[in-house]
Image (tube, rainbow, N blue to C red; front, top):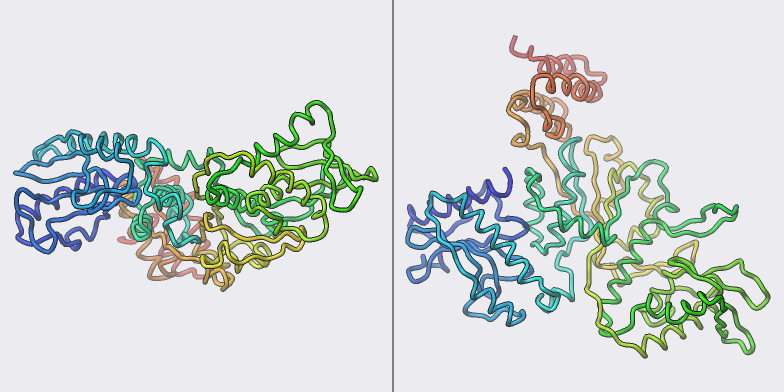
Length: 531
């Protein structure tokens, strides 16, 4: 059932319960449905303890951005005098904590009425109203509630989607990220994802924005994946040298940490602008920049830089070392060098001092706090202790921003920021799940994905149901077939192809060494179970 079909059912029950019962709203009326629509949470009310009476009427409000019915702005549907009405609303008892011009514009927004037989037209109009609401509300970050820019609502930072092959684990991570980014409540997110409904009508524009802003990375663990790939390690270069390079997780953590620091500092020049002010013009004119060291009559020259590295020459002519721009950027936003002790610290520190002079001289508005995401597919196929190393402790929610370790190669002090989400997938039929690191189990919140027969075409529903019932009884629930194997079936030819080349090999694996149950499963697959 997609978003619109679900909403139709909610509206029909909403009308029916108002017309045909004397009580107030009770969620048990819609236990088989979910109260979300296009990233909004639905709040449904027939009254506060007592059934409302005119001029008050029952309503459905669509809540987002931490807005509340009692204190906020929102799209709504109300039921008045046998008509369904949709528009944009403003709480009356408590003034919303947003721009007064936004409140005024929403308060003056026109409403539209429909009969109870025009639910499709009502939803079309609601969709238009939601689009208008988004445009009005998001004209600038200044319209967001004050707390929205200062904290990240979701407490759970490490989420594991697990289940049998083909249940939509990898497919659903986009919806999960979109709902986190949209500010949905934690329970709403988990309830929605666990229902595992069709996502073809799901708006993925938010996810595409995150991807375009380079705030997400997708990787797959395997037996050869290592700490050096994930955190940091020495890598051979084209010129034959070996150089220390950051892994994908460390790079994303650094980006998230810099964004977090930039959002906290109230007004300052951006690092990239400061480094360009200090270096760009002289480098382009082929001039070296002299930086004095703490030791008397000691200095070094910066002769080039790019988006990753600062190249410098020591006083004795040695050019074998470089400075990391990302490391320097973290120092810049922290206002001090808490990262490197010894090593190249004598070269980082005086350069940092020059940049901090510029930082204090020029003032600009702070940056918006944003979320960053790393998606780890097939996490249980990797050697967790080998890949995460000393960072396994730091991924815990209550350790973020607070605890730090010294990385073994670079000797940098390293923290995992609170605006980074780790989303992983795990195949529950994989034998390696039994030996998955207990430390990982404790640090993730697990969300089970189950097969959904509603997503299977009618031509394959009976086969899907019979096979899964047999597999559940003989092998266990975690081995059931996922709906994705069947979703693209349009005719008998498609069905036969799926049976022969996708399902049959899977059954051979499931029932290896169990000839009796393997034969029964094949009989079901070939329609011989009733003969």
